[in-house]
Structure formats: structure tokens, C-alpha cells
Length: 233
Image 1 (cartoon, rainbow, N blue to C red):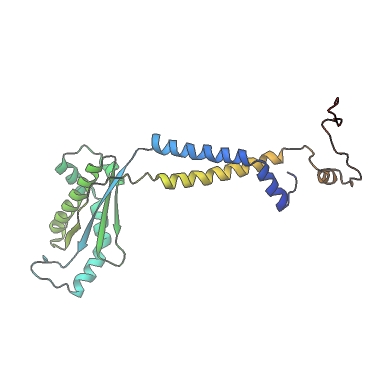
Image 2: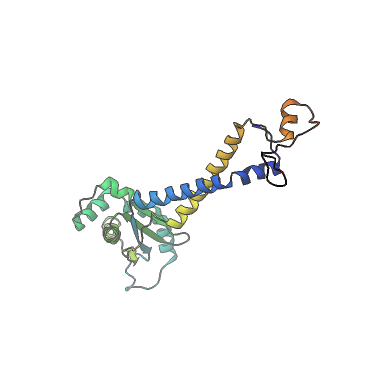
């Protein structure tokens, strides 16, 4: 590819501006068509659990330092227990859902709220109502399993999951921006590659660079000659 200075590079892109715009428009159009026509919308619902004292909050409103220390250690364990086969099989049985446990486990995410003894359960499904039901039932089954396994009642549902109205995996604004930048990158590469294989001579500088000889005289090219009265070519 011939060497280009900043001005030459700018002139190159300006000369190809319509092709660049066309490529960007096509890229954005492909992105919109893909997200609308080929992306299956999925909905996410979340419920939040809080770890309190080992007794019911109605029995004793105070939480001791020992409770806080114990809860902080149990958060990680509880996060793994939520996605256990025992909990998920009970959830699908209670809701009478024909969901594959392996797929269900992939669609459930458990996160620990930073600097707090809280756990957030998020369920993603193509059906928004199913996502909310599974999230809430998972929280209920998990709380009962904790009481059964550990013999303590220190997990309580803080916020119940609600039916989501908007898909969580589709963001048209974000998609348009992403495909816009993809289009810009493709257009830039296209122009540079096109220039790389362009061996035509456009200026006197091209001759000097190619042959290493100075250009002494240049003759302007005229398409036609006309007389003052509009004579022959």
C-alpha cells in the first residue's frame, strides 16, 4: 500500500465517503434485523433473600455479632445450595413444570450482594411469568431446605420476583451502537484494502514515489476545445 500522510488519508476517506456511509447503514440494518428477527426474547425476574438472626425476627429483633459472622460465612454456601439438584427438583415438582434441570440451572444466577448478608436469585426464561414463578418458588424451597438441613431459620425473603415486561437480552439502542461501530471498522478496512490494491497514478507525487524521478513538466488534460461561438470539438 502506498504511504499516506494524514492529509492524504483524510482525502482518501472523503473520496470514499458515500461507500463508507452505505457500509455503515448496511451494518446497522443487519444488526436491527438480527435482534428483531433472530433473537429469541428472554425475561429475567429476581428475588432477594436476607440473612438475619437464627431465630424468627418476631421473636427477637436483635441480631448479635455472632449471627453476622455466621451469616457472612454461610452466604457462599447458601449460594451453591440454591442451585443444587435437591432444591431445583422440588421447585419443578411444586410448580408442575416440565423443565430440564440442567437447562434450569443454567438459567438461574445467584449473586451475593456486596457488603451485605443478602443473596439475589435471578431466573431467566422465554416466558416472563414462568421466570417470576420459578424465582419465587426457588426462594421458598431454599428457605425450607435451610431450616431442614441446618436447623436454623435465618433466611427470609426480602423482595419477591415480579413479572418482567421487557426482555433482558434485547437492547435495540445498544445493538444499533455496536453494529454502527462494526460498520465503521469494516468501512475503514475496506477503504484501506481498496487503496492497497489501487496501482493507478493520480498525482505527480505518485510518479516521484514510484519511479524515484522528479517530475519536470505536467500537461493538463482538457476534455474538449470550444470556440467563442461554440465551434467544433
